[in-house]
Each structure stands twice: as C-alpha cells, then as structure tokens.
Image 1 (cartoon, one colour):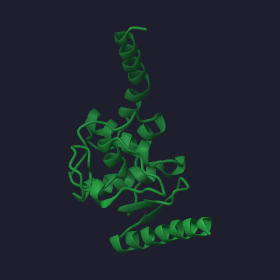
Image 2: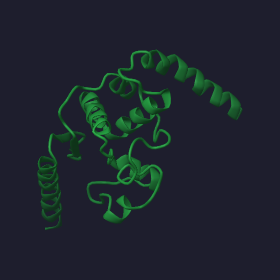
Image 3: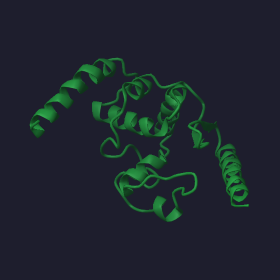
Image 4: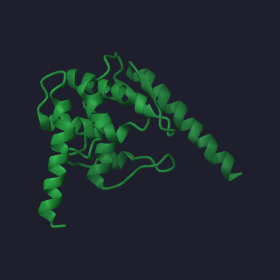
Length: 171
C-alpha cells in the first residue's frame, strides 16, 4: 500500500465513524478540539463505564479555566508511559512541552492518540458531574473527587496501597 492510500483510508474511516458522532456534540467544540479531548479521554479511560465521567471532569475543568493536568499529555510529550511502580516524576511533570496540560492551559495543540468511537461518544455527551479531579487506582478504575482536598486524600490512599504492596513483595 502506498502511504497516500493509507492516509486516504484513514480519513475515509474517520468520516464514516466520527463525523456522525460530531453532529451530536453538546457544546460549541470545533472538530479539532473535540477529537483532541476525546484522545485524552481515550488514554485516561480503561474501564468503559468511566469514559463519560472522565469527559465530564475535563469539561468541568475547562469551564472553570483550570488546567486539565492529564498525565497522558505529559507522557505523550515525553514519549514515555508511566506505571504504578514508576509514576511520573515532578521533574517530568514540570518539563515544558506544548502537550503538557499541567503547564499549559486548555487543550494540547493536537490529539495525543487515536480516540475510539466510545471515547468520541463520551466526549460528545460528557456526564453532567460535580467532579473536578480523578486519580487512577491502577486497576483500570479511578477515584473521583469534587475538591482538591478529597483528591489529595485519594492520591495518598492509592500511593500508600502501592507502597505497601511493594514492601510486601520485597519481603
């Protein structure tokens, strides 16, 4: 296959799958903004039932002019993948990149992944939620929080659980 043919096939498939969903988008998102947000949801959501809630959290953060602070955007900018044993470091989170949503307000300049139809749909119809934060449990699910204090407590509980597992397995 010629590269031009592959690109044509990809664009044709995008038109077939994504454009009908885009017509249902709630809000005044441009196509690029919507796909970019869906790509972040794609990388954050492991469990399908959480996609709309994650999309809702990001929409809330954008509405409140908060930074998205999405780990996958840092990972994308640095070309790395974090694990429970090797989470992002403070230095990595502070590394400048146009994709780093810890440092840059709004959406990154382009998508960070190819979003699935499920993530496109979740972003077209985000959950109406009060949550502003979430943290991964590293089992595919997340703990959602309304306040920063709740979020910090959830992060500490998860970190303590990971550290106790590491200590147990080392003994």
